[in-house]
Amino acid sequence: MSTMITTYSMWNAFRNCRKMCEWRYVKELVPVSRDQRLSFGSLIHECLEMWHRDGDVSAVLDHIDKSLVNHASDESQKADWHLARAMMIGYTDTYPVEAFEIIALEKTFDGSIRNPVTGALSKTFTIAGKVDGIVRMPSAGEYYLLEHKTAAAIDAGYLDKLWCDTQIALYTNYLREQGYPIIGVIYNVLLKSRLKQKSGETDEEFVARRA
Image 1 (cartoon, rainbow, N blue to C red):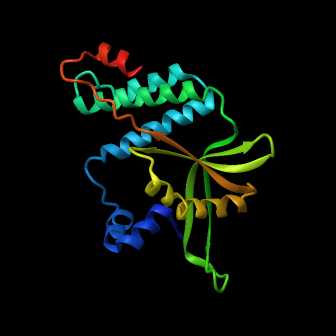
Image 2 (cartoon, helix red, strand yellow):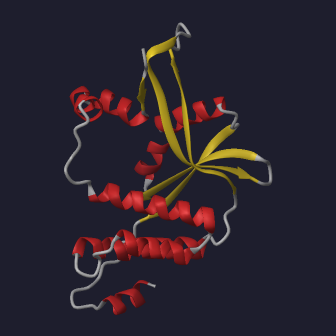
């Protein structure tokens, strides 16, 4: 009998609402449209992957243009276009060279689920996932997970949540089993600018002020 491949997202949904988990992961029902915040976060993740892989900021900005192709006429896309470009230009200007060495990007893993009491392997479920990156600090040769996040604000409440990030603990465990001696995580948090385009301000004027 084949096992069901599960993810952290599925188990998190199961913990919070079993009916939601059933609808999404068993019956495979999904919303007609995707949450704008999730779409924007995915875009920034893609841009950071491109930057860390190739180091070509012009390619990153071109990817933003192609991902938000209607930004000239759609107000929602225009706001995301300005914000994404500002964030990536700011990031690449601030960190033209990272302090770490990239080992892997968008690294996938899979593994068995083991009963922590008996040590028995599940005959029903396995688990799979993907991390944003695995990096190494050249000075000491230590391995870390690289976790990208976007945030509207970085305050004490936001930082406190990172200390009990179950997803990162889970991913670290499975990557260690695959031979990566992970000792910690680098949270790469990009703060969303609060700068907004003024009424009557042209795109050219806003770009100049945003810079």
